[in-house]
Length: 478
Image 1: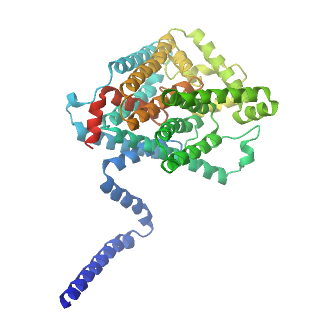
Image 2 (image 1 turned 60 degrees about the vertical axis):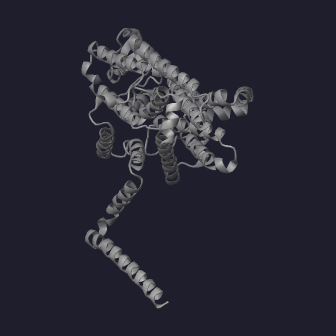
Image 3 (image 1 turned 30 degrees about the vertical axis):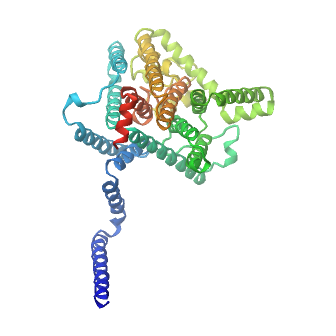
């Protein structure tokens, strides 16, 4: 008994010694750093989590930082984030594949041909433009976008890796909604103002409203397809919470194209997975539209809430300006990056009236990006008829690969098939919303706005190129 007591005391003494040693180690930087300790704590936390979770944790940080820290906060911070994130992705890629080019993951031939066409048309249009050097920045951004998208694609080994990427997208959405709610609570806008005729649109971190809503458009179909897979309410609580939370973000931003995209993706998911619910959704939408059309108070409410009259008026002006530009530059367009130099020659209003000042402001905040508010018009104005052809080819390539992937996995495990359906619907919704916008797909914007679509496309390509049994074997080994 005495021996047991001695052993117990010895263990307690060693625990006290360990505790003292840890306290001493922690107290030294606290004394030396003083006020700067608060800067060190996040770094320590980052190192601990990195050692605990490894590459997966760092990939989450890369995705979140690429979409939240490269916006309007600081140009210096944006450059630092790009350097760090690109370096980490490059390290992961080289660690996995090295310089063995034969081991690099391949992409479908149709996608290779599209990329060759896209860059060829862009270069030809630039050479034929009055502003041949205006495209240099856009070319650089597009090359960076596809390199980053390819690296993410190459790091995918199984379904878990893809889910990790899109879980990071959920986290981005949570950050955007939370920051918008904080901005709402700290600002001069009240909830009643949200429903007023001149209602404000609330968005923080990313001031480009349409760019911020792109993350909700991506998240919604993935959450809906997951909900359809699960059976009990207890299993669905997280997905319901996220849907409600992202819906709040949609109300604050009120993007018509985002609402159309989400409605379309939900319809696609129901059509593929739950045909009865698809017809119910279609009937519900039809009834609601008829009610809002024929019941005047509801019509007024919808017009106010969705800014229908002002929104369509703005697009009328924009589309007229783009069409007039196309008439004078049918073959090669005005040239990539040249829109900002040509747009003032086609203004359908005076520069000093309200619309004129508004679009001068848009021109300034977007850095002179094409304001056509339609993906196909954007390509047509900048790159002519060849640009329009290129713009049409992209949805065709996406749908071809997506539909073939759906057919391949139709009889696969439900978890995998439902997730693929969600991915396909998310990408399709981005394409659909680009009929009313020209952001989140290609060309206009860049990594922050367009990368989500290419993460979706890359994930579908992974499934497309891996036979069902192969992917199952890979997943089972991890």
